[in-house]
Length: 518
Image (cartoon, rainbow, N blue to C red; front, top):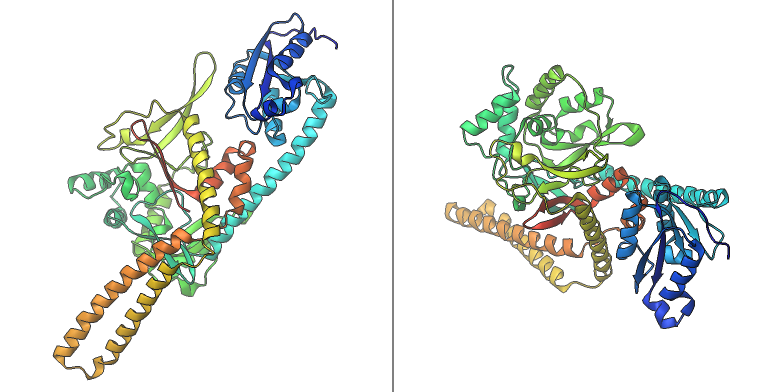
């Protein structure tokens, strides 16, 4: 075999791996010692370092410590090329292999196999690799398009809350409407703060800061909304308040609100008759079609005329549009401090050596009361993203299992349904006797019907809980993207995450807690 004489600033990495199955098969040609010997003979006298994963599977790289260390050294510029006995030592997953070699290309690191002619040191090898990458890119874009279409279809067809960031003043509650089950927003303990904010801000001399001062002076509850209550942000600042004051979620949408959005060129999914002055709105980005407006199942908090006056005032005060997209993490908008419940962001910075790193920023430290705990310092953004991704995979696996179990008869649910029917029948009989009832009987019937309605509501909540646990969710649009996670862009990962996750709580004390919306 020809010996290599190539020399670069970086060292030559020799990667060897043997799985348990290779040992069981007794394949001596793939033994660790045989791989090392052949690779060392090939590299000759040049400076090299051996990275060895013995007894590790080739199905992925995350569970191979030596491989991960080799990739870290490549990022640091310590490696010029990687030598392997066979490409299946490097990775058995073609998609993963393409992703890794594409990353190594950016670091100026080539991969060379002693057994196959396809390598990235030659122009032919790079051409073959690039062709495969094109096919992988096409597949990734196709899957991403299917995910986006599924989200858009769901948002267009129903008035359910689609998950993602928990809205201040509301908390989600699972309900069945028109035969479909989903999340409906119900007022939380902070709903009154939303109403007061709109009522104050419509006045010409009222500013955002004055409203915050008013809340503080009058002890209006916009704080101490703990993470477990899921009522939204735990402290109020001007940026959050500004977003609340322009959100159509809160308006009790009537015909004037319909005309407002229609005049802006938005696609109106519902007829004007649906704008009954009671229900709030969801406004979604519709891709090339712009924005579309859907009447929601939840009730708004703010009268339409008040909401419109606030929008008019904000449009005159607006100085510039902020169209920036945060790409520091695919978890943007979903993370909260596990201690104060306030939003956590991931920022990035560059040190003196030119290396870029990411870190957490807790917005709760900059509010009126401030977070009483230190920033999350032990957990790093990369760790949090890896943990959340693994939890997403586990969640999908649970839903797939639940889908199979949901086909079995559920005697408990049927028993609850029977109880609801009996309660309805008793209510019907009592209501039929009202016309002929005297004052005493009328009072008794009224009291009994009230208690029966409470009993029915409790039974319906019980049934909804059972149904939710057995609900067969269509996981196919999510399963495929999770399999090729590393090949997706940050924005594509974000789009998938918001379909699954309500919020991610992060703290050194409690670690990472993922609250799913599905």
